[in-house]
Image: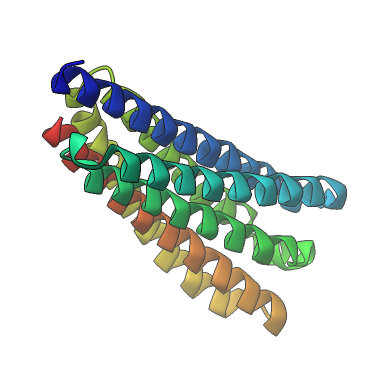
Length: 217
């Protein structure tokens, strides 16, 4: 078998695992959105269901990250851009950690603190924007094996969302410091919002990694 054909097979195998990892992250992000809606509606049982699903998704992402590490190690020099694949995979693993951390903090907040300060819309806006960014990352990953140029074009959307999250994050933090009077809830909310902002930054880093990967293909 020609080395070029071996490289093509290796590329397809690695991208398939990477795309699977992105798909699991997207499912976890959807559960974060569902948890946020349940929190706003004070649906405690649904919050616990979402938390359990996200814990499972985080384990699946970690297992896939290990799998892709093994795959790339076995491929070795057959794939010239193996470091870019690994970088994207590890960034996604970090995003899974952010999702889990944000979910834990929101799951332990009191519904009243959100309603009293009218933070329900702020929270849903922030989570909605970061979920949209992960949607775009998933589309970027899918485009890698079809049309890498599309991956590069989609990166602009992630960058725009990261800036929107950053602006919203700053305004929400200031509002929380003035409106939330229960110290425990203030700390949980502040950490959750900071986690969402950190997640948006990590989405931007992942987008950059996918762009580099698309340019090298």
